[in-house]
Amino acid sequence: MKKEVKKVVLAYSGGLDTSIILKWLQDVYNAEVVTFTADLGQGEEVEPARVKALAMGIKSENIFILDIKEEFVRDYVFPMFRANAIYEGEYLLGTSIARPLIAKKQIEIAKQVGADAVSHGATGKGNDQVRFELGYLALNPDITVIAPWREWDLNSRESLLAYAKEHGIEISQKHMDENGNPKISPYSMDANLLHISYEGLHLENPNAEPEESMWLWTTAPENAPDTPEYITIEYKNGDPIAINGEAMSPATILATLNAYGNKHGIGRADIVENRYVGMKSRGCYETPGGTIMLKAHRAIESITLDREAAHAKDELMPKYAKLIYQGYWFSPEREMLQAAIDKTQTHVEGTVRLKLYKGNVSVVGRESKKTLFNPEYCTFEKDEVYNQKDAQGFIKLNALRFIIAGKARGNK
Image 1 (tube, rainbow, N blue to C red):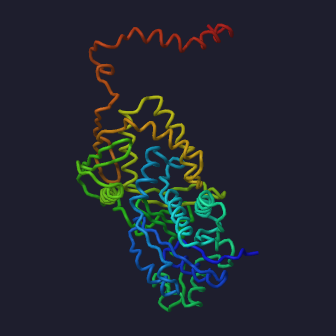
Image 2: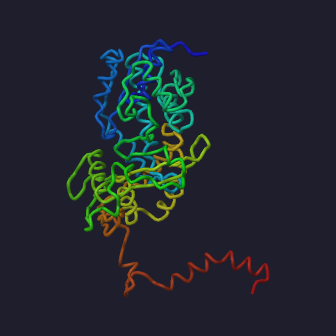
């Protein structure tokens, strides 16, 4: 039985799915709808969402369009990259990391306008339903959550197109054939300043190579410039603060690195991942700036981070990445891990020089005033500080348990 809802905040892009959800909420719940459109740097105009919402009867005061790019990069992307987070060894979590911020803004708007419910367009098969709803309930345990894909019988993109046509909802030409009828589903795509993802169509066959025309952000590596390009990234407290000597805001840093990565064909990934809900899912991703940042961050850590702190971080990272992937951004365990990770970043500062060339990022230099790299100790030439004879006792002590066990077992 549906709970009575008076006002609902919808995560609204103005695209096909959320436009249908808007109409459905009006008809099925008879609720006042408030739309929230987030500018996360997805590369598309967000203002048309206002026009579409107005055309569907939404009051102007109930339309929220917020530019949250800086908050997204500063408070979500950068903390994640301090941990060098990668899910299952390949996925840089571009979709996952955006969901908690969208959920946070929806809850803030709900409080501002007195809404008693929030709604999203994630399907009942995907991870995003979990990410949104864990965020909602962590921030407001009393909020009502409406997930249309778990309630209605519109179970395919084609049925959505038919519903839109029946109810006079504007449909983009890209969804229609030459006769004005709904056509086959386009790729399911998600984009923000960190990445763009592609799912569906022939990508559902994990043995099918993606069409070159699918990739929207990056130059094909084989078509990238034949001359390498060098860039320098400066770090402070584990975060990038400047590129080639020019200080920039977090969002500008990422946008600039995206441009370099796009030019040189960096950041493409074709992944079969294990979804939280149980099935394996194939997706393709472009994360150009993030790929560059990950390489640079590990490089500056390599000379500024204590060995055992670095090893401990690497052990924590898979757990941290899994928490983000599964939607636990606002959990106490993620916050605990974040505090530990951030503590290690106090001395992670300096510059990293990178070479970009045909899909590859190579570290060609790194330096820091707080470097732990001391050539007086590690030189292969004569030194005055390290007594090589000390290694004998170190080895003997570490081997002592083997020696004792070997003698007890009669090993010769």
